[in-house]
Length: 108
Image: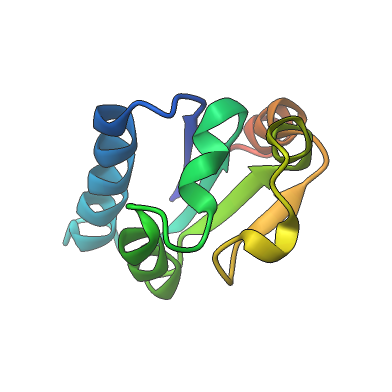
């Protein structure tokens, strides 16, 4: 299964919903093979910073095979350096571009 999620809001409830969905998808016994991609852009990239309130959950998701794609444009706009990010995250040139490329490859 190719799963794709997108987050562009720094709202706590949206971040919590995304991470909860990733955990539920991973733990769903009906899903045998999973390829989970998450694209994060806009103000939501703040959750990808070390010591954010989401750090523990993001690390757990990464350990469970979730691939996080963080928008470099958003990082630049918010003054966040790549060195500040949680280890294991992938920065991409454009979050919106990555979202579209993944959809083109069959992620939904």
